[in-house]
Length: 335
Image 1 (cartoon, helix red, strand yellow):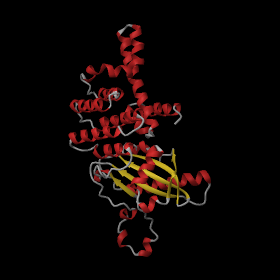
Image 2 (spheres, one colour):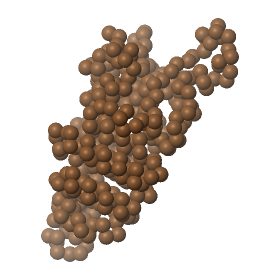
Image 3 (cartoon, one colour):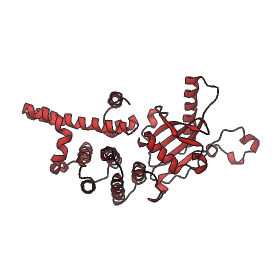
Image 4 (cartoon, one colour):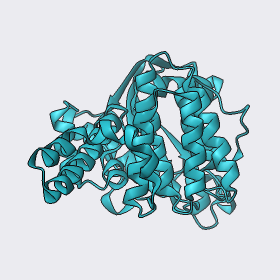
């Protein structure tokens, strides 16, 4: 995920954490940890990131849990507690430490429904509010910081371009209004112009487009064409993005002629594979070349997503590559 990049995580913390909390966190000491605590069966709806940082002049951790489902989870406080205990267990086992570090838990939610669940563990415990104070003291309770993106207006989405693109897309992904989603995509495209490195922007946008067109199976060819037109006027060099979008539509069975007017954009992505088939001069070879080129395109998208810090399970889902293939690519790229 984009948050895996230290600069983006710092941008979020500086812009969204309460002032009394951010002032005791040294964001310049942020260090991403490779551990993930979300088990395999929950990966479809959740992803997580863990950062180490100096908190109040001591080693501590900031734990992000991202909920990608279209509805809220009532047991989120309990899940978070289990993940934090796992973090403490791993720390204690690795360093044989007698003390536990502070962990600041944050939940970033971008579902269709607004978050209506209270943000404390105590709310899950039957009759907690009616308990005598002496019993409350004996009962575990904590609060997590919640960021419900469905409640944010455009003006309330703050930070640098990458963070605003991510949050704008997350906020609008489940909207019933296809025009509203298109407007959100167009807004994200306009933010790309703020990035100094256009190639980074294009790679980042490819990943987001793949996410959008996989998450929204109802998007039509007309929606696709509108996005392509906007990209061409905003980013003339965005042929790589166009190629990736075409690949997404092909995988989803929506192609039906879209590739016809995009041969130039597709040439670059399929060049290697096509050459193998064309050299043989046989139809079978050409088909094989296209197949190799498509696979190569997926691999390139996976490499870019890994660079951006995206969780490997999510990359596998979005590209259609197996988890083993993604892990191999990550290893080859040094991640």
